[in-house]
Image (cartoon, rainbow, N blue to C red; front, side, top):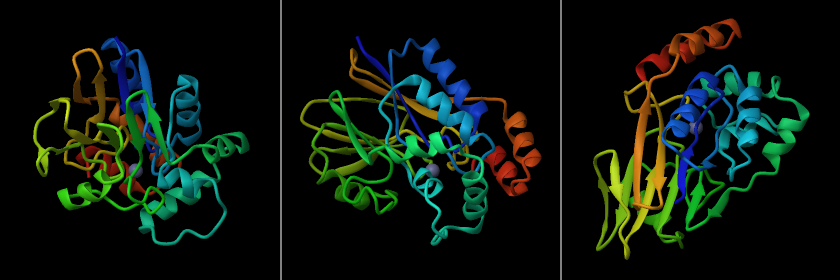
Length: 241
Ligand code: ZN
């Protein structure tokens, strides 16, 4: 039976990415899907693009991937994201940029959908932070399960009678309901837990589990400092914000 590892918001954190992929392997995942934002913020954009490409799996483009492949001025981003993206632009090869350019914003994979931010406006990069945002996205969701990211906070939204958020780290997929599932962030979690986050979708047992994995945080932080990226980007990794 197929077991998918669904991961994203890697943000150029190679230590976190490698650890997540090792964990997925140890948990006998047979397939992979990536919900975007491979680059931005941390020190290994090129290496992370290469690593994801090696998996040869479905990938959708995130807003940081989007900003990294153009040369237009960076607007509407916070100063930290801006500085990191300028650095990222100068550290991606032509071929890596071309590959990112070829990514779509929404994809259907088997019986589920992947998108970076929202289904109601995939290129608008809105944030789903409450059930009303989730409701808007659900009206464009044509599979029972959709995985997304962008807020860097794992979350399960379920649409049954109404829409509500369900706590916990495992959720059974039941027929007749819809699920909009945030897999959290591999490389820069923001829910106060520094550990890398990703989800496993077990198609045999019809269960989705979010896993939190410790990785070599200090190494990732040192790389950020060595690269001359803002120190704040190294500090925030330790607090998961
Ligand atoms: Zn992101």
